[in-house]
Image: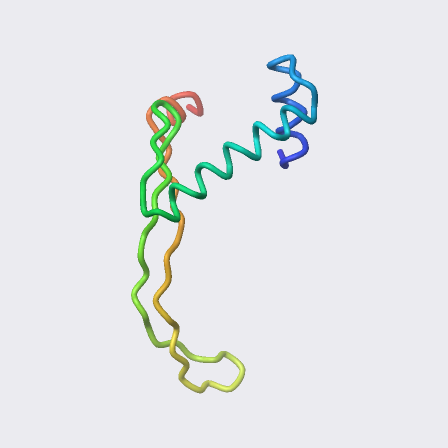
Length: 90
């Protein structure tokens, strides 16, 4: 399912117009993104938890030339499925 299909499903499930459903979906994504930028977790009980993890700087190699390169430290979004989501899949 892509974003357009999600918007259509939300519109059908809630009775909203597609444009209202698109604004609602965009708003949810924006709120999750804003919370993660602030370093906060987003817990959706029964669904899962979005969090930010930190990656330390490391050293890698350019596969073409074999020369060493420095990979800078970075942050990465993570998702851990909740019990309700896991149970619904099995």
